[in-house]
Amino acid sequence: MGKALIVYFSRKGENYWNGSMKNLEKGNTEIVAEMIAELTGGELFEVKRITDYAAEYRKCVEEAKEEFQTGVRPEIKTFKESIDDYDTVFVGFPNWCGTMPMVMFTFLEHYDWSGKRIFPFCTNEGSGMGRSEDDLKKSCPGATIGKGLSIHGAEAAQSRDKVEDWVKNTRQ
Image (cartoon, rainbow, N blue to C red):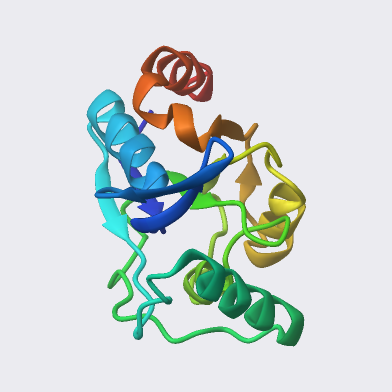
């Protein structure tokens, strides 16, 4: 594997976690992204919305639904100057509305993905990858989209073996 980039969006704070609400000091997707960076030696890049989503879970869900229904591309704080130096990009996100949060579309649609290999990873509370892999294909023309990794959010911190096996398979 050449140089790897791990791009992710994660949400800490009040989250739905194993059937109830829990305040997370670190988002589940960030936990998995850090594991991938450690395993690959890749560079981490966190996608951040210019205005944070609501701290309260239910309000955040409403914001996410509204963005999804209107197809808006929320502004983000910063873009990576270039992705030219990376041949493999791991793209991580929580499953919102059956796909990636709209803030990830903002990031992804900014670049030319020709010749890149993209491996998505998604945290969720039971909804798996949803249609995110198909949406990645549409948002990243020219890229090869590899098999995604779905991690149950409440098990993110204990998922190292699963993440390690998946990362090994991305090298083939």
